[in-house]
Length: 183
Image (cartoon, rainbow, N blue to C red; front, side, top):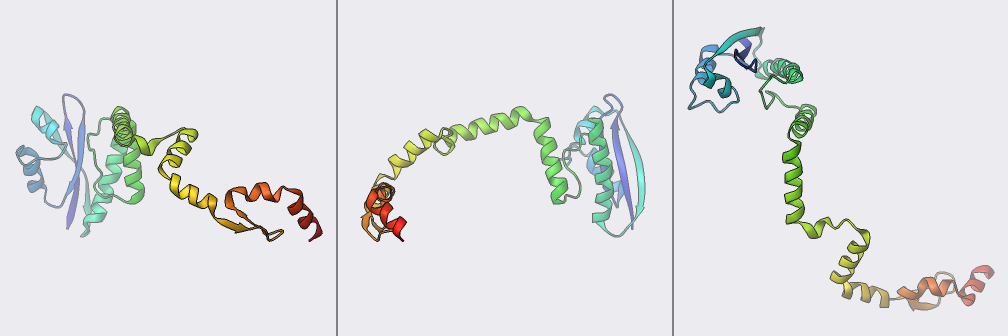
């Protein structure tokens, strides 16, 4: 089959849309039928002052390889900032990450606004100050912390039984220190 990479260019604004197809007539119809056109190309078509250009003809049976060629044209187009494609035809993980970074860079205000909304929805999860977090954690886990502190543990140096909360203090006392030195 013969694949075609094409460009729809607005003659007023110089914006352009890159696409690919195996059936050029069907594709042109989809672009020009504004009721069905859900692509970004509709912005160019609505102005009714555009030029349709075939960029490359490719002999391939594989839609994936045709879309990879289309990706090259889109990526080059993005560098000029006149390309209005907001998605790439075939996405790998690397290309997807690149597209996400590009979108974030171009929509910084939306990203900040979304992060702020998320913060306000989940304030308790976003406690930044360590002191506040420790207080928050302690208030919500008092019983568990209290039980752990009361647990009896065995000193590894002198085999004395002490509360978990007092273990460090015990190990700094002379009785335990002497046992440690003698061992």
